Image (cartoon, rainbow, N blue to C red):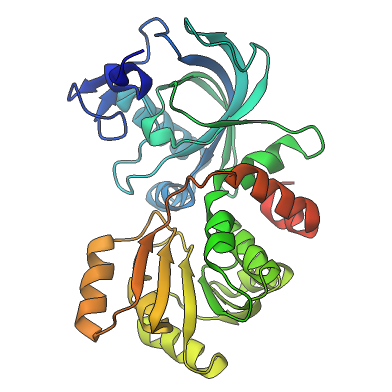
Length: 334
């Protein structure tokens, strides 16, 4: 198998020859190449930033949201929101394997652990869409490349809960990797899925965690994850800095940005010590803005892109909710 096939470059149509995430359009109809996997898709879990944008743009109308989602997928051959640049992930059943691939066996229920922004996808029907849930039930098909990671759906957890957890499993893995006992940790957007799991992982690692939440009704979720919750507009950098200063002497050793709206870069930088680290896990982040804000306010904190892939991240996140089952009632739809 050559590199182009392994990484899906052969399915990039416009422009040809680029990685599929960079392509404007993907080929979804050609026969399976060696190493590829065909999936019958039941659910999409749309990235929080993308969902927020679609909901806002359509006024929260379910039919309009379904039309917008379908239009993106049929125009691009993937769920790659042109406004936010983000996608999500999916759950389905393995339908067929390309030459040379032997696992997982057809019939296996899996969740993909790579973004929908690089996954060839067809939507044949939107079966169920609730504007208040980022999960969309569909009938469709997708292709996973040989390089694509996936997780077999465990039998001891509700399937839709697993989908919700795995959609953001990189966040708690980063929290586990970066947090040390005794640290002061701030989580911006602590009441959302990725924020809650990040808070729980950091608390488990022995940190003191301050969860910044907006709107007010998200604070209860942050508290259930073990954080000290503070309600503050996370897009207001001075308000964020003041909230952290009031509650944490000297600022944060570690800041995670998990909010699903743009404009949180300034607050994250101001909340962090010069010797600290900011992990931008939100797909709504402008990395240009983050760099220029840090320069403009004279902060030398380390800034990290929260890569959604960390070895072992799926098992880590699922084990986290097994230890803290109360989180499932917040993370998973009813």
